[in-house]
Length: 175
Image (cartoon, rainbow, N blue to C red; front, side, top):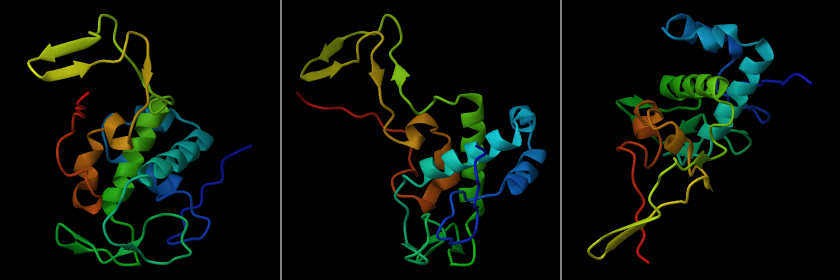
């Protein structure tokens, strides 16, 4: 069954921040978009729907513009880089991030299912009181967020989303 992409602004059944046609215009103006061009219409739609769902896992500043909207955008009560969000649009950076995540998904459909430790990884390293325990060889570690798998999305989402404006972080735990 073909995916049904719905990109209605503040729609109750919306599942994408951008249409396939608008994403194609975005990629027409980019280098290195051959994977988008080569994809079927169904795969393009599915990748945009999936990318939107990944991006919607983030915590955004401001408030949804309507309680009935399915997606987190459009929003109100937030300004980013001098642009005030209103109920009448989804910021270009959110749409661009959706396109970029969709392209990454087309290139690697299993990217958010987890990562496998590299052969030869250390199990544990101690530096004084600091001890770091690595996952064992071949163990799968789940990805915590779309920005863990695609850290360059931070530059698109900058001040619209909470906790993504800085560099990627490393989680340390005391045992």
